[in-house]
Amino acid sequence: MLHYSCDLCGQKTKDNRFVVRLEVYPSFDPEAITEADLEQDNLEEISELLAEMDLTGELHLDDCEPRTYRYDLCEDCCREYRKDPLALHRPRRMRFSEN
Ligand SMILES: [Zn+2]
Image (cartoon, rainbow, N blue to C red; front, side, top):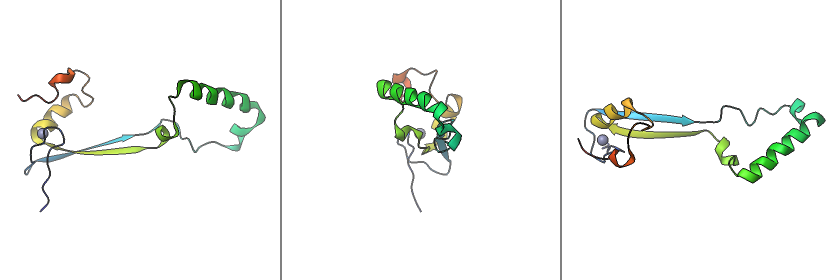
């Protein structure tokens, strides 16, 4: 039998193991460029967009790839995770503290 450990606290999970799956993907489809998009009218817009990307460096090709994350959590960590999945309301240093 496989043994899992909690990805948050590191403890071995027993019977109660919870799986968190996260999927991150752009809200636009980078492959959904049609021929209409490539028409002359849009070339300027596209090149502006590309120039902007060069400047900011914020949109790399990798960022367009959907990514899936999978985590195993113990019962305690899952309970905490459900309250605040993105840890928006938790100070950083509190994240791994024990209650
Ligand atoms: Zn845990």
